[in-house]
Amino acid sequence: MYELADQTWRLRPRRMPWAIADQAATRIAEHIHAHSLAHVTLILHGGEPLLAGPDLIAHVVTAVREAAGPRVRVDVSLQTNGVGLDAEYLRLFDTLNIRVGVSLDGDAAAHDRHRRYRNGRGSYPAVVAALERLAAGPYRHVFGGLLCTIDVRNDPVATYEALLQVNPPMIDLLLPHGTWTTPPPERVPGSPKTPYADWLIAVFDRWFDAPRQETRIRLFEEIMYLLVGGASATEAVGLSPVSVLVIETDGSIEQSDMLKSAYHGAPWTGLHVTRDPFDAALLLPSVVARQIGVKALATECRSCRIRQVCGGGLYPHRYRSGSGFANPSVYCPDLFRLITHIRQAMVAGIATRVAGRR
Ligand code: SF4
Image (cartoon, rainbow, N blue to C red):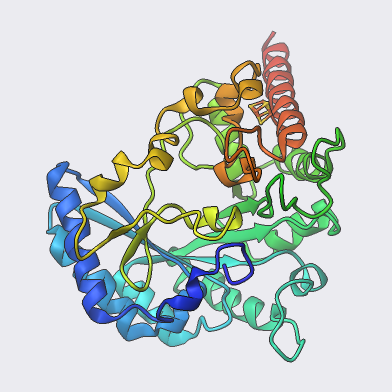
């Protein structure tokens, strides 16, 4: 978030004050009870959430669960770069049942391309050591999975196989943030070339054709589920209404922090945990646009034959200075090719199975 277009982090505390954490817990409980929810998900995110320290993390999680009450399930997860994931944190996550996702971009060369300390040294050895403690020991049950940001300069299959080395239960493959105004690396807006689809298809084929399932890959599973008529559970694809709000360290209520890639102030709502219930966000035009499915898509997307599956792609990826978010994804050709390929692979897989039964 420090490198994205939105720079409001500069004006905010680095750590959430305990009083704001308590107010956030009260708001979450208010929302749970107003809608009679039996289950909510709390995601601890950064920056780097481990820099908050174990005391604050324990306080936030305990405060939310106590405010929610014993009949409500509060699933808690945390996304970390893994560098500070030591034995104390693992014991805490075990005690509080917090699922941990770790960012890992592939093998040492791939990972250290972007993830370096200030002195230039790569963080790969520290992250892999943390993953060994997390994945192979008594804390395996809190291992949520890996987050890998795609860099098309890295070999796709080698990247996937490097991630498999730590035996993750799930892998999230993340397209780099970018817009029509600030395109992602190697993505020339409007070009029919599909560097990201080419990369993802190589991983998909390696994953889909494996003799046994080695791990789950959320993006592929979501697309497959959508192709058979399901609804998406992530913002990356599909037309499901957005169901995430962010509480910043100063108590501001914002939209998904992925919007930070669009422009300075893009996630802003003007709401705050000390004044406003979460439902107030539903009245904001920018939130309404993400609740009304196909009606909010660009003209090209509304007439696209895979719109129910693609959904115009991730909302920030549609941004273009001057026309806002009423555009196809800057990844449009990649998404079209990837989804078409997955559909063909599924059909071929079913045909092979049916033929084998005759
Ligand atoms: S493939 Fe392109 S045109 Fe079709 S829904 Fe996705 S972004 Fe829109």
